[in-house]
Length: 217
Image (tube, rainbow, N blue to C red; front, side):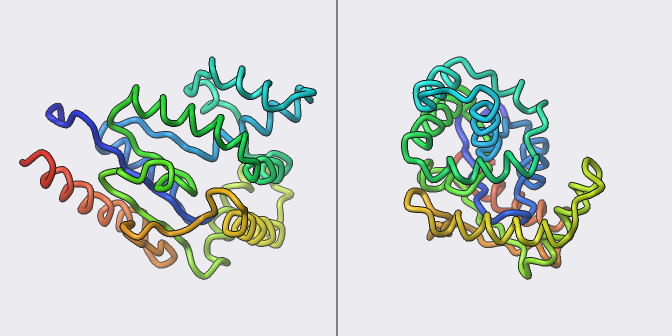
């Protein structure tokens, strides 16, 4: 893999589709960095909720100029309050621009990277490989997410999770800026009836094929 100088993999998709797990495993397989776009918005939401700045745009500009991404990976950012507020701030163009600037600098620094989010193929349209991952029907995604959340919060109900996923997907698909859409070049994967190994195998096949096209054997 040392002969690969630059390689970007985009993983876009809906809430609860398993794209975060797929991104983590793909990054681990190739030894590449992984950037979770949603964590950046969640971190921004958490810090605004804590600090209550008068000017949140100026506050976030300063915050993201010196952000250590590896540190936010260790923070619990998956609370209902943060989920709801991060979806709200994701609609604001000025906030999206601040986070987009951080993402671009991070990719320039890392070179070989897996990007997970909802609009990665809009920000990085020239990525070598693009995936669009869903989990349909929604109840399958909700049950998966519910099992994950119950490890941290035993009081969370399946009904709450279903409502949250529906709300998040509706907001992501209908917001004015960078709405959730499948890129024309993306590989579509429905994870509902697939084990994670099958998902990873499909993705690996695509990535390996593009590595061969671009860099040879």
